[in-house]
Length: 190
Image (cartoon, rainbow, N blue to C red; front, side, top):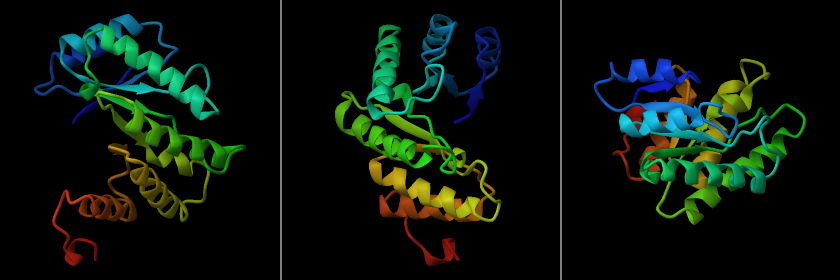
């Protein structure tokens, strides 16, 4: 689906009137001053909404990520937005920075916990290219594809990826084939 990325509730509302199909709104965090407006607009236009584990900074522990997401799920549900239209983003940080590897492990565990614990089920989403920020260009496709596989194994439902990255797109195809969502053909990855 089309993904709208704005913190401006009025701009979102105006854009939504032009959409033929309900889009995905990126994103609502615990920091939003216009939280109620964004939830109201999401509900009125039957859009889907990304809720992001973010409160000032990206949380460093799985517990903090889950607490923020739980709060946002409750707010969305109270605004009559069902879990099936919510996409939980555990917030991806780059592997090369500070505690990047620990953050990424927490992101993986957060996806797994959301898949196992939230009922009714919620969708999960991640911005895959965030993991390779700051790395040399030649390494990015390998790191991005590897991270996509890592999160897919935890149950990731959706991913924002660079569709011009051949390695990542082959990985997307293979994940879909492994999940029996498409028919495998060697010609499609050669």
